[in-house]
Amino acid sequence: MGPDLTRPSGEGYRHVSLWWDGLPGTISLRDPLPGDLDADVVVVGGGLSGLWTAYYLTESDPQLRVVVLERDVAGFGASGRNGGWCSALFAVPEARLDAECGPGSGSAMRRAMQETVAEVGRVVTSEDIACGYARGGTVVLARTPAQWARTQDEVAAARELGRGDEDLRLLDADQARARVGATNVLGATFTPHCAAVDPARLVRGLAEVVERRGVRLFEQTEVRSIAPGVVTTARGTVRAAAVVRTTEGYTRSLAGEGRALVPVYSLMIATEPLPDGFWTEAGLADRETFADHRHQVIYGQRTEDGRLAFGGRGAPYHFGSAVRPEFEREGRVHDTLRRTLVELFPALAGVRITHRWGGPLGIARDWFPSVGLDRATGLAWAGGYVGDGVSTTNLAGSTLADLILGHQTGRTGLPWVNHRSRPWEPEPLRFLGINAGLRLTARADRQEERRGRPTWHARALERLLGG
Image 1 (cartoon, rainbow, N blue to C red):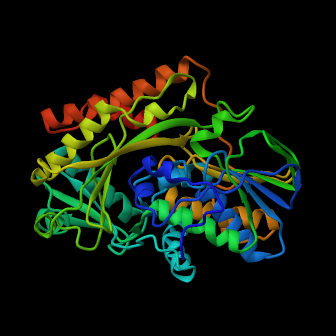
Image 2: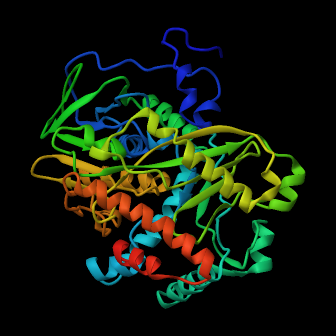
């Protein structure tokens, strides 16, 4: 089948990320909202959260009139830019969930997230979404004595919570290097609960699936405000009994939501396709996702076409929660990512970096992702994933569908349901605080590398993040 010549081309979006650049066929743009509409449910945000919500709503009730509004194109935000980890990671530790939400809350959330990794695999298979889903698990390396101590502490804490090797396994140096052939490896943890995916193919494929189910997905439609029963856009008004906000790092653009979630940038690079000889030494034979136990997060995966896609934090928070295209190309951070990648795998020293990109992720003031519905107003929301959204969006979508349709399920009783985070501080307080935390993270890693043990910087960071 040839390209759809009836729609304007979206080929210019290939610059967004490695994943967008690799989308097969011609990228077509969907029509914008044509004017005022009525619906049963209107979803604001055409990323994974919004599309999974539409998917599960129409799975439960095919007759529902569901409208999805996207300011740009489906998958333009974090859903099409991330590291492609479909993992069981949740931003709030089990112990904190138990303390704040009641005993057993942490294990319930963990089990739900583990089931979600499998659920995404089920859907991409049943719906024939070719997104390179490979459930190889995650290896988190320890490469300094301080990191090794944290690794052992993590496994000991997991055992106290009743988690066995089937959930989290301690690897010695040889076992770890057999999976990830990086430098200076002292050991690692391994969990099977993660799959590597191509996130752009996942989100774009999901958009096609929900459209086939009758969902009306409008792109190039900027939402200006959300209120009970009504969404106001630059192109018309949509009225619906349920209004769902799934705008993540772009939430600050909505009227009255400027301090709900802050956008913090995570940046990535990707190599050219690498020869078999490199992979013989580097491992990742099962396409395990990988990281290490430093404080400033790094993350990587072996892509389906044999590249290394590698990312990390470290980009500054921008005053006023600003989100701009130039923030996606921070040369200093991208250069640091390349140096870090070569430090891990010296054979990459002369390899060409073909893609550099980034984008904002959403963080709530207490670093607590949430999903919920206010039954009195019909307003629903999901977000604040702190970078762990590829799988969490799926759980959010199925949970929102349950809440909107009034179904009482195990999902609707999870501890993140109807959690309310307090707003972020006004400027300049949040600018000063967030960037101070980022600098503290980098300094904690530098001091540990020099001294071989945790310093006061690391302890201060743990207190700051509630660890």
